[in-house]
Length: 356
Image 1 (tube, rainbow, N blue to C red):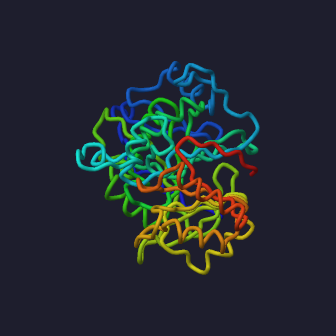
Image 2 (cartoon, one colour):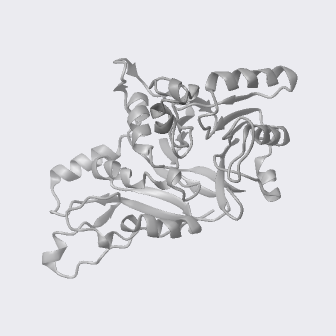
Image 3 (tube, rainbow, N blue to C red):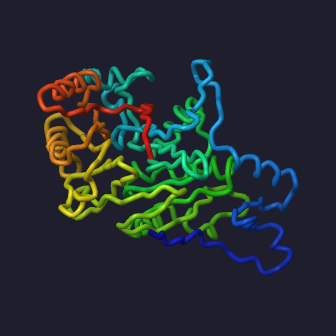
């Protein structure tokens, strides 16, 4: 169940003059603390110690009402439920000859058709307290976090788990600098070897921070290489669910407890189905209402998989602008009577209490 820790590559200071100006890490009782390049101060250490001890606090929401995160109940927050390009599409809103009803609705910030890159936050109340584990940080992650983190009192990120290395899954890694510069010393990233090799090209300066100019502040990330076998994150067992995301392209879903999350899938290998048994909540890719694409399930194929897997409840994610939230959900509701299928579309900001 171990994950290979790679960390980041850093130059080693060899002189006392260089030593004072370099960022280094000191382990206090096994906990790494990151210090500034301009030296150590008691004020900085005190502020860092206070910051990293906070995991969620009541905050003022955009509606000026106080939102208090749940104290005991673990939950999932849908940080994003849309495609790589997001919804609404700019092209739909600027086309004078085209009427796209979903994008028109999604122009309203409070619309459930407004969707950013697919991602969830697992809020796990385990032995070490409430932990925030993010699955994927895509190119719209900053906007999703800006919308939902203050509203739900989310401050720290205890880990990020990566499903695959497309831009809608890793494009927001650079935005994690706000956390590692201002909230906590570092963020662990759990990623498959093939996707880490991509990151070494797309985010080379986050993997090898020796190339970063003095004084520049980038995300402090600790990379852990995962295999297609269970691993532990903050006392929570995570089981990879290998799937195909296009011919020859491997992506990972993840199981934690009896929740199964598969965000980007075009086919499920036979060996993955046993890992989906006794699933209470299935969160699955459903891009289009009428058909699949070479890289994603459409709604008909996704429903066929639900019938095969037989979860107690299913929430679809990764919907494009042809999927109207209210209309599709009204259709899906009928399946509860005809087939006893509890299936619905998710939406950005949805909170689902879970038992872990």
